[in-house]
Length: 500
Ligand code: NAI
Ligand code: MG
Image (cartoon, rainbow, N blue to C red; front, side):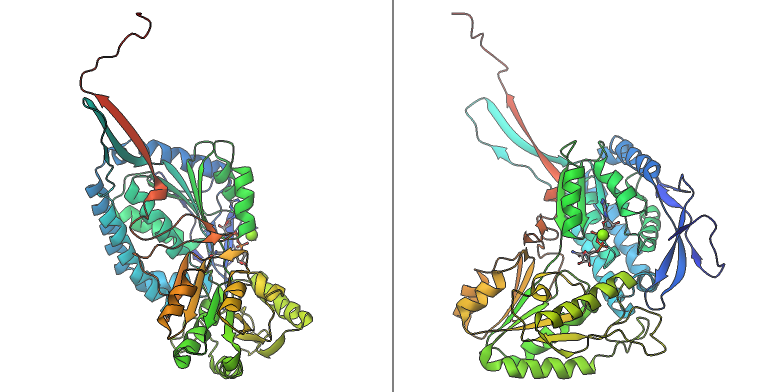
């Protein structure tokens, strides 16, 4: 993956890391090729930071806390964030092209996401001068109050499935809170974080407030996690990686927040608006090629309408236009990598061996124009039992598992019988049932008669193995702030207890 002398001149070249407001070459001089998932071929050269680069970036982030940034009032941080939002909005078309080439998701999806991200930054800006503390009533002459101060230097470790969105959800609130940040994008998608650094620079953030160091997870990422001068790690990715981070990063008792996987139940009762429910279920099984933690990969269907759901899923799978992510006509793009494609195909084998019925898809797409990329068919298993691995493990591919149920209690039992608890969907026309079931689902986000609805104002995060902490919402800054309680005596008298 890494090379000393970059090959083809036709590749887009990114040679510098962004540290302390400057573009600098990685200290060990390494560069990597970034593969375009749609073609399986390199499209860009990116710098590969090592441990010494992480050290430089952390030092710059620490230094920035004692510079102008550390003294800047919230409304000025807000103004910088609004400039960042404007810069992002002006760059949507270009950033969408870059991000789409780097991670393979559809160009039109990236455009929509980036446009929303500009509003996300506006939201975080609006919170930057509202980090109010409280006053605490104490006895006469004693005055108590709290102030909320930034946690400090934050390491943001970013996955490949939605790099700029993940940066937005972490770096936006971190900056609004007054923290400084070292961003480590995923090795599969190193490029867009560097483009983000350009926007940060243009917006006028002081040097060292945001630093970007692409690098290998087990090297640059692990070093950031273990760094004694990093106060917090904010991570989105695999649960196994989070557990390793907790073990390796425990020395200075830094803070952690985690946004991990999901195996979301999408429950459809027979009394639902069936067309809408199945539109949502077939959308959310395959959206983003299944590479999102939020998607409804376990479709729980009441037995009396189960056959109908099986039919619709089968027909719909055949109508999905899998194609190049740059084409407006495409419904679904490739998987991020050969590794991820193999993972999905291996679960197709596992599902078959477990006795589930493959009713659509399941194969790599070998049409000439797609054969070099990592394209797979939208895939559906029927007759799935929740104990099967295809119902328990996160596949991160376009694979739906259709599970029948008989009544409300059984639906809930199946929905909650999962290590994960990130999102859940529920379709019913019965208001009582909507309340009963949604209040008993062990998930951080429950959608009733809709699915995948997410805004800057809706807190998002997981129960159980799906994570720690929440992103978004009015509380988005909490993980990046700590409370200082001050108690002040107006008399200043303090008696001598040894005088008697
Ligand atoms: P990963 O958790 O290994 O990678 C995510 C990020 O963590 C990358 O930036 C990577 O460089 C970094 N990283 C990896 N090991 C690290 C370490 N020891 N210390 C510090 N940083 C480290 O996820 P991966 O391997 O890319 O994907 C594997 C599976 O994880 C996927 O198939 C999917 O099931 C799940 N996943 C879930 C995501 C989510 O949104 N919840 C996002 C990405 C992956
Ligand atoms: Mg990994």
